[in-house]
Every structure is written in C-alpha cells, then in structure tokens.
Length: 230
Image (tube, rainbow, N blue to C red; front, side, top):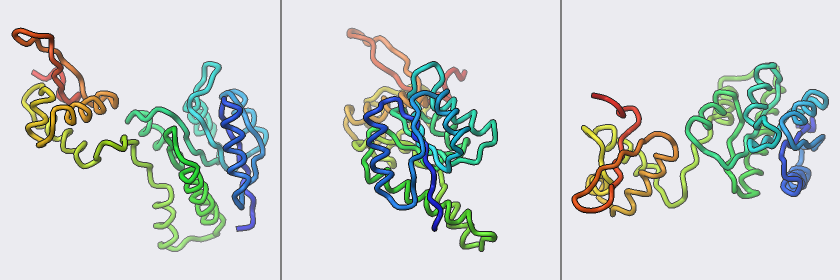
C-alpha cells in the first residue's frame, strides 16, 4: 500500500490528542492532517481536509457529542472510516455505533497496543478497497476486518457466565434476588450480584425492591424484556 492515510483526531483533551497523534505518526501509512476538540470543529476538519480515517472521542464539549458527529457523517454520506473512542459501553450505544459503520469501538482506558491493532486493521481495509475487483476470499477477509467489536465486559466477569445469568433471568417466572441467581449458577451471592449489577448498567435488567421481615428492602432483578408482564 503506497497511499498515506489521512487522519483527523477529534478529542477534547489536548494532551491525549497529542498522545494519539504521536502514536499514529510512528506507524507507516498514516499522516495526521488535523485535530479538533468539539463536534463542530471536527465536522469542519472532516469537510475541509477530507480524511480517510477519523479517531472520534464521544465525550466532547459544546452540546454535540461524538456520536452526534458520527450520525452527521453518515447522514451526509461521507466516505470516511471512524474509530469510536469512549468511556461508555452501553449495549444501545455500541449497537448504534456498529449500525453507523465504525471500524472499531475502543473503551477507555485502552492500551496503545489496542489502538495499534485497529490502525493496522484499517491499513488492511484500505488496501482491500484499492482493488478494482475482489475475490470471494477478499470479500470474506474484509467482512472479518470490519466485524462489529464485542461489547466491553469487565475483566473480572466471564462472558459465558454473563450469558448464563441472562438466561436464568429470562427463564424465571418473576424477579430473582442475587441469592436466587447465585444458587442457579452455582456461585457466591457477591459474584452473582456483580453480574446482575453489570446487566443493570447495560439497561438489560431492572431492579425491584421487596421488604424483608424484618430488615431493609432487598433488591430483586428482572430481565427488562419481562418487566411489567402480567
């Protein structure tokens, strides 16, 4: 690949923006052509500089967020790849970002190696795009390169057990306590509560309260899809 990929960095923190720029400039095939600190200035940079790639932080000042800028990029039909960067990883936000065609979704804090990995992926994507015709193998490879990133799961949680907890809640006839879930997944109540609270943070699970006799109200968890059913 001989073309240098033009990159615009949209990040409100000037120190972090310089870190990104230094890392990107150290890699072959990339040229940082501009930086911006708000969605409005980010749009101006994209419109003026016509980058191949935008490194887009979602947490921007000034009213419009990074995801608002991403929506505008797609609504305007701009042919630019976007790497989303955010401290938030709700299921809805991740899914919308994937629908809007981000190359990857990086959850802060992430390592420099993780950023290098996605940048290398971008080189491969653009190399494929320069071909006049793709073989089936090329198409399959490109699909893998732009496959949606997996939603962030904290290191102390297991993806498999998280799915097990989801299944337990969906199969339940009514709300369950952390102790109920712990018994069904063969774990401690503390461990079960960690999984349940994470699902609450993803808005997949709602919390009800029931008064013990005697004692303070205890939390009861119910899958959102079932909440309110008669």
